[in-house]
Length: 230
Image (cartoon, rainbow, N blue to C red; front, side, top):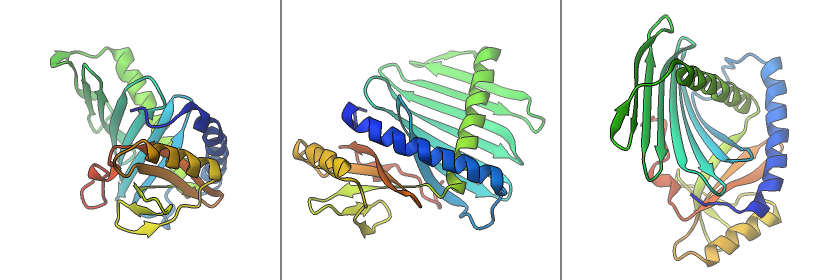
């Protein structure tokens, strides 16, 4: 998904680094089970490779995460689902959407021991090595810690369809006007001029301000999780 351009990445990364640093400070200074946080949240961040959007649901000690990675340029769009039960990782499920699709599913029992693993590439089933499983577990803990920091920092992801007047109809049906910087608005308008349909935008809102994350022709709302369906 070539949904962004190189010129837009630098300001976005600077903003993201400051947000994550703030989130890390808040995470260290506040209880990770802050009762004021809603059970269903959406957040995200940018790195050098692409944009990551994260949906999370907390329910009586169980945590479910869905992350979607969109590369800036080369690479494949991918999704990853993780589940924890009583803070113990129980499920890892990965999907890489390439010419040769890849699907990975790993389950762990109540003691954290491997109970099921399978990798399917282009319809062919394969086994996973212990090193691969260890890497998947490490990435799961990384995304969980990042999600914790983003929630504590009140970094919220919003998505919707862009209109020519600068307003956005969000996936929740609200009409809002994001407080974006001029370079972000100009970038969206350039993309819109080359699209026959209204482009979708994803942006982050935090106490420090708002920042554009993604622009694409794809309708983000057709697959965005909701609290009831997630």
